[in-house]
Structures are given as structure tokens and as C-alpha cells.
Length: 572
Image (cartoon, rainbow, N blue to C red):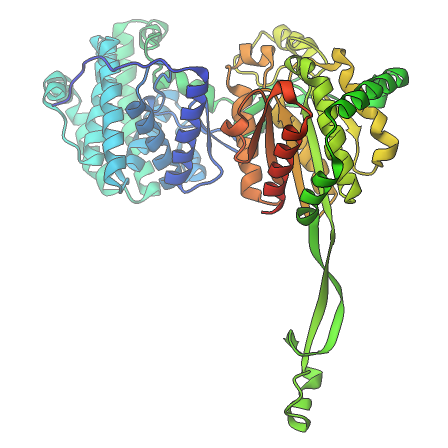
């Protein structure tokens, strides 16, 4: 029997919510067999942005729903991604809005009916039971139109999946099923028979949707104006498909600078005010020198011996290189020009060609520094830490870069002002002016740019942090060096933070983009990524991570921890 009791709610911290969504995203990728999909605020996305999946049961409220319901919704999205060709589906969608949404629901149920794992089928069934409970608690079924929609959803899903309708729903739907029998009945068996053929299924679904659209229009006309009916449908307690679809089917808005930039659902309102500078362009020479003097004094006070650091890094920064070609070798590849030797001198094994190899340094390491406001107290210790690490790498002929990321303004600056003038549309994406800083480039020598490290003590640079875009910038620079081994070390004291972006989107918006970026780097495998947390555990985002004590930043233990982390990511 289907029960319609209240669904249990649960309160989770922000960290627990982020961890849960990352786990559900992993389930989404695994079940859909598509490594390119992700979840953004529990909405499905890929590299082109949010995916237009519009069945109403796909979007339980994350703050109120239990794990079973969230898992069922994720499984449903995965089945849709696995079994539905989005291009073919888009071609088959009708123009009329109500018909489009009915075809959307039917296509979702078709994909769910193809689920093979018993556990997935159970999760899908539970999620639909929860959704039906929500629908009935919202009292949307008390209107004629609401009951008509509920009947179509329940009956078509039962036919497609083979799950029987529960006794309570069967009693509730008796009258409306009889009323719809002439419109709905002739299509049910053809729908089920076409489940494995998306094209044929879409043709039947379109015809059914067109037939039902006429009934919907007649009911709306009887119950009142269309606007009144829509207001009754869009109850605040339940985000029905009619509200969801308008957002996801709509084209991406444009700003004054052009199209929004999309990456797995991540948006940027505008890049017009973003800035990239060298530290010498924004900090006076006198300030760089005085800052460098203070950092040198702190490094001396910490008195970290350099030789052990160089020794521990030596083995992992070298790569095997071909030195020269060997002929008349006793091993390697068979040399066809020496084959006569097998006959004339059968005891002579020198019929191979090979290459001699030697180890040499071909390595690049980038240090990417979070220059958000909360990092100000750590600037001096961070400078001492980098002083030792970069000096040791320089002794080993490793190419190094020191980069920083911050913003030009607090609370969004000119970007947020433009967004407000545009009417403050929902979910605008990143809403601040990025400022990326180059303190040392890979092409510059450490001896000449050592003083640039003093820019860390320029506290007016520290504002807000958008980590993922900075990481993509740093990785792009690192890849251009084309080193045999490379790694980026991200040093931060927490998750990304930008007040304007969080206010206009959600608190985890930037953190999701960072997690997605790190996951993409891990899959690419060409660059090692090490997360270094100051007073915080970066392991939530970075698989290779180190946590440092803020009070001992720059001492032997902190240097050793980062060196060991570097050894790990460079040795892979």
C-alpha cells in the first residue's frame, strides 16, 4: 500500500550538504556511465550548463528531504542521461508548453522503466512515492486540473514501469481515470511497447500530449482564467514541473559583455572587469623590498635547513630522458640492417638498436595562493614557507611560479552593480571582479624576483576568493611550460568565499566549481594537484592534501609536510 505520511526531514550543516552532493554526483556519473556530468545545487549539469530534465519528482528540497529521496532523484537523473538521446528528444518536443511538459514526463518515465539494477528500481519507486505524498499534502489534487495531472502521471508511470498502483491511489483516481479513459486508454499499451525505441515512443507521446492538452485547456477554461489556474498550480510548498521547465528551457541570458560563460553549470555574469597583474605593477618597489626584508627575517628565525629539503625533492623532480641512440646493442629493437650478422656470426648478439637514457630535471611547480581577507594573518608565515620551498626547487633547476588570486572589490563591486541594474535576475553566477597576480613567473629567475615575495605583506590586496577560476588560470600557465612533470600547490585557509556570489546563487556555488575543477584535473592526470590548508583540512576538495598549523607556518614541520605532499603528487 502506498502511504502518504510526512516525509522525514533532516538538518545538515553546510559541510555535510556539500559532502552529500559530491557523493550523489559520483553516483550520477557512475550510473549514467558519463564522466562529464555533475550536480549543481542538486540540479543535473554537464560541460554546457544545466541539463533540461523537467519531471517534477527529480527535484526534492535538499534541506527537507531524506537521503532515500535524494538518492532516488539522482538515480532518476542518471537513467535519463543513460537512456535518452538529448538531441533526438529536443527534436521531438512539441511547441505548445503543456504538450512539451507532458512529453518530458513521459520520456523520464520511459528511461526509469529501463533501469536494470534492483536497488536502482527500488530507489526510483521510493522517490516517486515521496513525490506523490508531497503532491497530496500540498492539496494540489483538490482542483479538477490538479487531479487530472496527478492521474496522468500515476497511471502512465505504472504502465511503463510495471509497478502496480497502490490501493489508496487507486481509490483516489477511480473517478478521474474513468473520465480520462477515452483520451488516455488507447495510448498506454503503445507507450509500453515502444519503451526501447526512443523515436517511436516520442511519436506516441506527442500524440498523447496533444490529446491531453485539449482536455487541460477545457478544464482551465471551466475552472477560471489561465492565470488563476497557474497560480493554484504553483503552490510554494511544491516546485512543480511547470515552474522548473521555464527556467531550464529558457536560453541563457546575455550581459553587456556577451554570452554568459558556462562550465558544468557554472556561470560568470561578466569578465569585463577581471584583471591580471604582476605584483610589481600594484605594489611599490619600496614596499616590496621592506616586505621581503621582513620575510627574510622570519625565514631566518624559523631556521629551516635547506639541504634536507633539496635532498628529499631531488629524486621526484627528475625525469628519464633519451640521451643518444645506440647501435650494435645487445638489447632493444631488432636492427634489420644487422640481420646478416645472425648468419655470418651467429654467436654475436649485437643485432639490436636502442637508446641510452639519463635522468635530468624537467619539472615545473606552481604555488597558487589564496589572497582572501582571512589569509592576512598568515602572510608572514606563508612568505617564510615559500622562501624555503622555492629556494630549494630553484637549486634543483625546477621551474617555479608564484601566483595569487583575490578580487578588485568587496561585495561584487562593479559586476554586482551591473547585475542590479539588469533587474537582479536569479542565479547570475559569479558576481565579482577577479584579480589574478603574478609574483614570480616560470620564465623569471628566483634571484631577480625574490623581492616580489614581499608583496604578500601588502594587506590591501586581500579581499575575496574565487578559487576554481584561479586554479584553471594557473593550470593553463603551467601546461604552457610543457614540463615532463608538473604540479600545482594551492594554499588556502578554507573554501572559496565571495559574498555577492553566495547571496545571488547559494553558499556552495563556488565550492562546487572548485570540486569539479579538481576532479577534472585528477581525471586528466597530466598535472599533480596538492591542496594545502592553513588551519583547515583541504581533503574535502583535494584528494592529495596537507593541513598545516597556522601558528607554526614556515617552520620545519610545515616545510616537511608540503615537501612530502609534493613528492606524492610528482611521483605519480
